[in-house]
Length: 135
Image 1 (cartoon, rainbow, N blue to C red):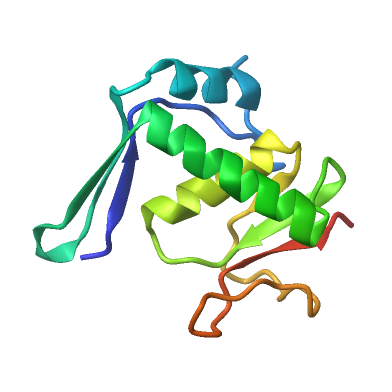
Image 2 (tube, rainbow, N blue to C red; image 1 turned 120 degrees about the horizontal axis):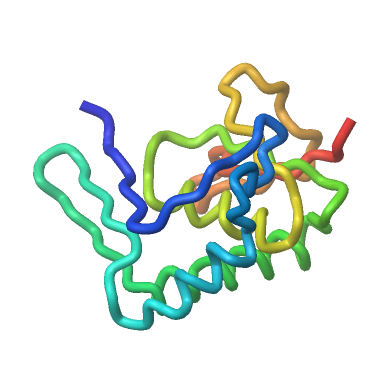
C-alpha cells in the first residue's frame, strides 16, 4: 500500500496546476494553514503504521523554507512550472504548496520530461523535484 497524504484543509486545483477554480486561492489556503497554529493541518500515514501529523505552524514553516529554496536556488516564479516526480509523501505536498506560494504552476504528471540540469537532488544524489520554465 502506498503512503497517503491527507490534508486537513482542501483546495481545488485547475488543470493548469494552479489552485483556485472554486474561489479558493493559494494565498487563502496558506493563510488558513498558518492561522491554525498548533492545530493539525496535515496528517500522513505510511505503511507499517508510521504517522506524521503537522500543525499549521510547522506546515507553514516547511512551506516558507521550501518556497525560499525554490526562489533563491532555482529562480522559480510566476512564469515557472514545478514538475514533481515524487512518491506519495507529505513532503510532496509542501513542495506543491511552496510552488503555489511563489505563484508557479505544479505539474504532477509522471510522464513529464525531466527538467534541465537545474533539477535539485536529494542528499543521496537522486532527483527530488525541479523547476522548469513554462512552455
